[in-house]
Amino acid sequence: MVNIGIAIPNRTVANNTLEQAQQLFGQGLAFQQNGQLAQAQALYEQLLNLQPNHFGALHYSGLIAYQQENYQLANELLSKAVQLNPNSAAAYSNHGIVLKALKQFSAAAVSYKRAIVINPNHAAVHNNLGNVLLELKQFDAAISSYEHAIAIKPDYAEAYNYRGVALQELKQLDAAVASFETAIAFKPDYADAYNNRGNTLKELKQLDAAVASYDQAIAIMPDFAEAYSNRGSALQELKRLEAAVASFKHATARKPNFPAAYT
Image (cartoon, rainbow, N blue to C red; front, side, top):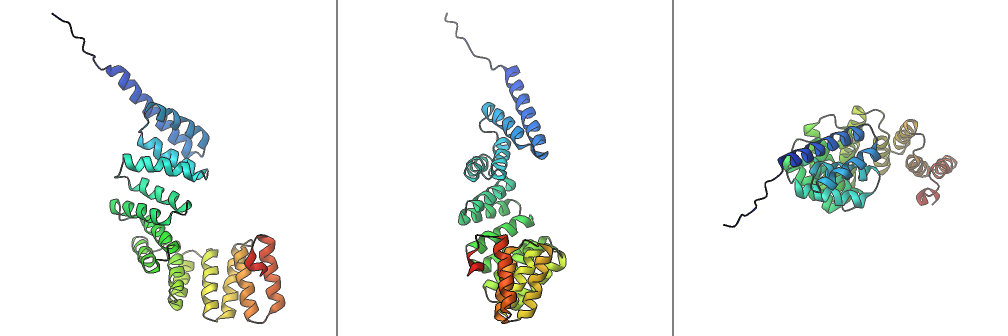
């Protein structure tokens, strides 16, 4: 009679591996939350050597790569993460952020939309979708996304600001000014919103009001080169040429590689 050997799984080894993986992941998260990214990454790499398809390690390694501006690696890691766990709204959302950094705006929009299908109540994801739609010049769709964000979070200053940008692109200038002013009401130190309001007021030929808005932006952010340059343009239209030249000089001093200000 032939004796056939049957391999019995070593449950002790499997349990030890699982316990080690959980420990590595927990320690990695703790380091990452404390801003110790190199230490966290080293632990995630150990974990991925043990379990190459560990969703959490792939996801959070991708976030570290993004923070280190290694966007290609972040994209590879987060692509694997969402394939492993297609029900993670957070992974799709973070993948969208990376794709936007890579200027892959259409792919970013797809990723944000998948996140929204899983979790439709995350205001920041609607806002981020609006931002990539803005880049794609899909202004009506961008406005719809910002309004979804505002419906979830009524004091969402950033969504009001970017909605104003989209409205300005559609030449709905009064509505754009109102949107910027709502953003400022919720966030009084919002330099970008003051600058954007200035741009719209300038387009409405309300030049003195535009200059005042740029001045408010600069008071909040003294190194705001774009606001100085935009202010110079408004002063130029007002025929206040010496003041315009001074404003352009402030812009180029703060941002030497700034062709528009030199022009």
